Length: 388
Ligand SMILES: Cc1cc2nc3c(=O)[nH]c(=O)nc-3n(C[C@H](O)[C@H](O)[C@H](O)COP(=O)(O)OP(=O)(O)OC[C@H]3O[C@@H](n4cnc5c(N)ncnc54)[C@H](O)[C@@H]3O)c2cc1C
Image (cartoon, rainbow, N blue to C red; front, side):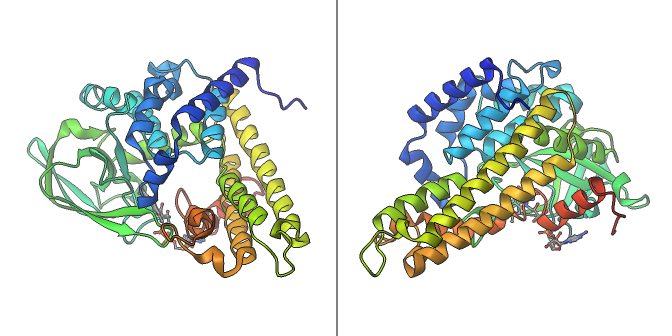
């Protein structure tokens, strides 16, 4: 089996590495410590390189970059700990609009998204529907030429810095739940919308968003009335297309090695000489290599035009669960020092051990929980019967 990438992908890897060396400064990383994993300047520089547009499929008018090149880009940015939440959202929404949106949306949204000037947040989850996203209750009712929207969304991450929300609504209560949904791209400046911050233990800032008689024209609808499930599937398809890799652990491992070199054991020797510390570091690095195997497999499938499904769930499940395990190991081994938070003067390696320990569990929830991923793998790979 030949795991090497084609020369053009390796050349592109070098280009991405050089970009990171030049633009991913400490200031950029520190700017995300307020909980918003997005930095406008960094994002715009990625856009200026043409990498957002490059990730959009060629048959939709984007292109230039292959699935393997995209995988390489995501891998290098994640390994370096770059803030790329906005990048993923921009690529997914631009691709969905280009495939299924009307001319108004294509003109109003896509150029600004791909030039890095604007963002669209995802408004799927509600207080009573997360994993079961099709149970969405936010209502959209047609009134003349307009739609009137009422309801509440939970976890509308980045809504406070975005100009739009890709909003999942219920337009029909008389049909099975998947068949009565409609999507809109709603300008967040529309009267009747409130955005309230939600701060997580993982130090992220997300939002609860409220929609009180929000009126928008039909030109903001994407897809057919009651055909929202098609938009959902398209969004998932493009998300999978760019999410080749999942590498949350390497920046944590690097930080822990730095810490363990400096910290002493009671006998005065360095913590990094401890056998258990060394064993766990090696185990964590092996897990990263397994992640790489999953990531390259999904990237390879995408490059062959195969729409992968269960492979994406395996990648996400393994990467997030192993990251959670590593963050627990490292905080245990750092002892009480490891719990000192970001911003505290005495925090070792800037407090990032604590930051990762708080953040890691969240990665097993968003983008599909571990339980849902296990269900999908059990059904899709092992052929076990559906449980719901
Ligand atoms: C920090 C953060 C950011 C987020 N950002 C966004 C965003 O930008 N936009 C957005 O729309 N959403 C976002 N989400 C929401 C996220 O996608 C949901 O939290 C997730 O899908 C789970 O839904 P829930 O929280 O309602 O939990 P529930 O679905 O209520 O699940 C509760 C528990 O039950 C388990 N469970 C549920 N169903 C099953 C089942 N069938 N079988 C076995 N176990 C099951 C779950 O695994 C979980 O452990 C974000 C969440 C977080 C925490």
